[in-house]
Amino acid sequence: MNPSTHEGPYPTQRQSRPVFWASIVLALLALGACSGDTDPQAAAPDDHAAESQDQHGDEEAAHGPTDREVHLSPEQRGLLQVDVGEAPRGHADAMISAPAVVRFDPDRMARIGPRLEAKVVRVPVDLGDTVQSGDLLAVLDSVDLGQARARYLTANALLETAQADFEREQRLAEQQISSQEELLEARARLHEAEAEQRAAMEALRLFGLRQDEIATTGRDEVLSRLTLTATMDGTVQRRDLSPGQTLGPADTPIHIVDSDRMWLMIDAFEGSLDRIAVGQPVEFTSRALDGKRFPGRIDWMSRQLDEQSRTVTLRAVLDNPDGSLRAGLFGTARIQTGDGDGPPRVPVDAVQRLGEEDVVFMPAEEDHAFRAVPVSLGHEGNGWVEVTAGIEAGDPVVFEGAFDLMSALTASSRSAEHGH
Image (cartoon, rainbow, N blue to C red; front, side, top):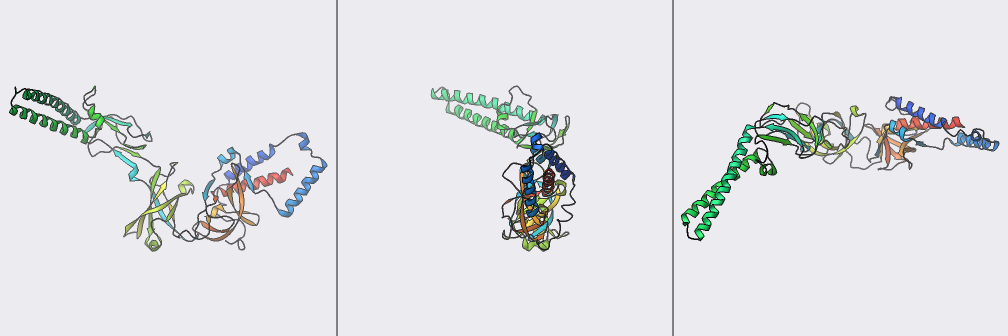
């Protein structure tokens, strides 16, 4: 893919993209070009202006177009899917591709259910609802819980009585009215009542009641009433319960997930084991997401090979702030096996042909503007191409949408020529 051997624009992958967006851009830019100043004086330039335009046209014919920037309006920018990323450093062929699937991070998932048999009374949440820790998820009714709360209330009453008896015996003993034996018996009854109260409280805690719920037991509430609340912030992913249904202590009918960070499980073939290591960068793409790229790093590598597929399982963590990644999504993981040396590289689709030059698009200083930057290319592999001159590693480059920007640039140039 060196410039000296490259002929014509890049084939198939860029040209096979739908021309729908390019058509929209062409139409919008054409309208923009036609909606300029309608001042009659501007429409009829004087001889000096005409001469200046002719001279400018001669310069462009001699030196080629000088405007390499695409200026989009906010509306046009909203129509195009333009993804900008930092050009990583590394050789294009120092990469391993492997199938991968997205999973929920188990540390960011909560499975919620009762710890005793209970019947569902009401479910105020639905699938997809966003909840915060402590929010009410379901109201249930449990005979076992009612009995446990009754024992707790009885234990509290006995403790209060035993405490009062002991304090009375203490006063009588100080006045030598009561015997020491009666004081010891009162102290023993107090200790027994304290133990019963602690046991009743612990039973309620094991049933899932919070300390504040235990403390308010018996205050204007149904003793058998049980509430399930969210234990973390997230989204209701599963709601497998309905009013009247009986649940057991092994049931977890409500699942809450936090999908801001996901696991990527990768199956790498055993022939590449000697090139893979924990800490290497990974990039995940899926056709379902139109090639959008999700970066991450390998943080775990299995010690066991699958005997059937002869693959080893790897794990990477991917950030998912916009929720695009979903559990079960299949795609391709590209593992950068180099040590971070080599030239900058960009996706093959990021490179376009402008005249006799290969160019990539970079953000310009103005909002919604991009400029075409000439580059020299090196080796190509695994959907990437090395850039030997024109940009540096870490520079912001349009990874996705370069074809549409090239169409917009071409439309803008044609409108300018038509205006002359």
